[in-house]
Image (cartoon, rainbow, N blue to C red):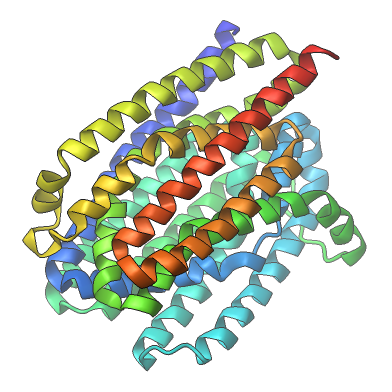
Length: 416
C-alpha cells in the first residue's frame, strides 16, 4: 500500500472516527435521556416512528446514490455530467416515497398523534434522501470531514436542544419536532459543502436518462431494500406484534450494540472509493488493504463480543436503569452477532465496489427474507429475545455467503 493512500485513508478515517465518537456519545445520551424520562414505552414509540419511516423509504433512492458515488470515485470528471440527472431523479423518487408513507400511514393501527409525527418525520426525510447525493459526492472525492462536521452539529443540537425540550415538556411530540429541526440543519450543511465538488448545480428531469441510470443502479437498490428490511423489520414487527414495551426493551439492547458499529462504518466509508479505484488499477495494493481491514475488524469484533456479554447487566443498569433489566438477555444474544456485523460490512462493501453487486443483492435478499420469517416466528413466541435470535442467525448466514463470494472474486482475479 502506498504511503499517500495510507495517509489519505488515515485522514478520512480520523475525521469520521472523531465525528462518530462524538455523534454516538451524544446520540446515545439522547436515547438515555428519553428512556429515563418516558420509560420503555416512550422509547418503543420513538423507535417505531423512525424505524417505520426508514422501512418505508424503499423508493427514495433505487440505488442511484451509491451508483453515482462509485462512478464518480472511478472517474471524477463524471460528477458534473451525472449530477443534474441524478438530482432530478432523486427529487422525484423522494416525493413519490413521501406519498407512499402518507397513504400507508392512514391505515396504520396507531393513535392519531403518532400518525401525525410519522408524517412530519416523513416530510423531513424527503430532504434527507436528496442530501445523500451530496454526501456520496464528497465520499467519491475521498473527503469525509464535511460529513463528519454535519453529523456532529446535528447531534449537538439533538442532545442539548432536544434534551432541554424533553426535560421541560416530558413528551415525545415536542422532542421529535426539536430533532427534526436539527436534521434540517444537517441536510442544508451537506448540500452547502457538497456543491463545492461540481462546477454548476443544475436539476434535469429527463426520464430517458433516468431509465438508463436505473438499469445500472437497480442492484444497489435491491441491496438497500433488503438491508432496510433486514435492519428495520424487527423493531416494526415487535411494535405491531408485542407492543411498545417490548420494542423499548429490544431498542435499549440494540442501542448499545450500535455503539460498536461505528468501527465498520468508518472502515467501509473510508475504503469504498479506494477499493473501487484500486480494483481497476492495483490489485496488489487492494489485496493488502483488504487483508489488513479483515484482520482488524475480526480482532475488534471478538473483543466487542466478549465485553458486551460479560458486562451486559452492568451496562444496561448504568445506561438505562433497572426498568430495562429485561434487555440484559437480549443484549447477550446480540453480542454474538457483533463479529458477523463487522465482517459483513466489509464484505458487502468489497462486492459492491468491485462490480459484484448482483451477487451481494442475492445474499441480502436471501438473508432479508429469512430475517422476516424468523422474526415472525420467534417474536410471536419469545418477544424481544426472539428478535435478537433472528438477527444472530441471519447475520451468521450472511457472513458465510459473503465470505465465499469474496474468496471466489479474488480467485477469479488471480487466474485472469
